[in-house]
Length: 442
Image 1 (cartoon, helix red, strand yellow):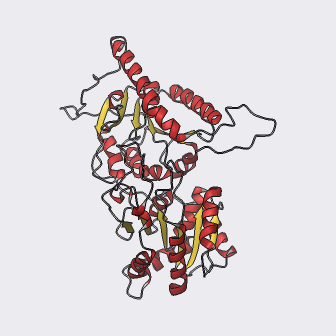
Image 2: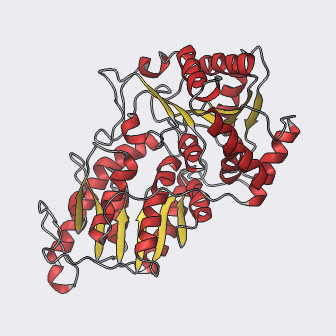
Image 3: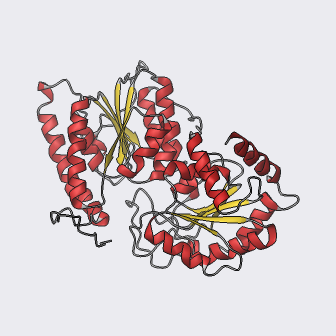
């Protein structure tokens, strides 16, 4: 989607002022990236006698060695670009690497917007970021990243991307002897790895990511980790609530996230209608005295929140553009539960231990749903869903997302009442006690 960017003071080059069209970039990555991969692979095969790099043939599988030995990494480059939610789901995977190889350096290459979360998590040595806001910023940041990747001399690459080719190219460019990545059906990129892990769509994405650790001798389920929250961020969240007249022990306090992140599609496929959020917020406020906070980032989500608030009979708090990612985590920790579309906020809430009411349409909760027994998941499971998968490069032609639009807000309210807020609600005491402990910690 093209958008105008103001000219910086003193002018600027045309490239700097051009928005990077991510849909176009996807097509470029699909076809031009494939051609580059073929050239690099062919060159590597031709020169394999002159280097010590092991280069399996293009169609070979790479099963584990019969003697049970595994490559021991010392300096690792992990990669996953788009999706803050994916970065959050990867924290337990990174923690598993850190636990198995405590002396190893673990760098992570991602979108620049994700670097703060990864640095704050304590699971990585360095976080490298690529900026896609404009063509100029992309070129500059990618050039800097390629220099850093080459300079770091990694011995191991773990590529968590499911289908894009640019990560496979960067992995090759790193010079790492061991390159581990998904051999996803139909994506023509697995041949670039020295360890080719079959991508399977039959488990939660966190477990699928963990499959890439098996060539490093790490197997079995990864243990959940909590996202660390700094005292300063907790104080910021508490000050925000005091500013809006919310007492420390008010019950219930509910965050609602109306947005869906960057939209690559013709229409907002993953977004529950704003009027449904408004209906739910009004019933929670009217029948249970809930204080509702709408969260969001950017002008689009701020306007979305304004449209929902205009429909309300009971007031709700506008929390748009108020928080960094770590401050938002602190606010979500203070809430009794969070209502969200399939977005990073859903994963962030789960990472700080807050129950989530999640709304799914074109993606499957089997793969991306919040983990835990106290969460509520709404998904109609129509015969046309999921239409966004890693096999089709997350590209949908849907023009009428009935899958998410027809989730009834009154049915969502009834489930919340039965599980969280009613007198006999299953998790009511847990919600009260958890937030009391959090408030005391602040």
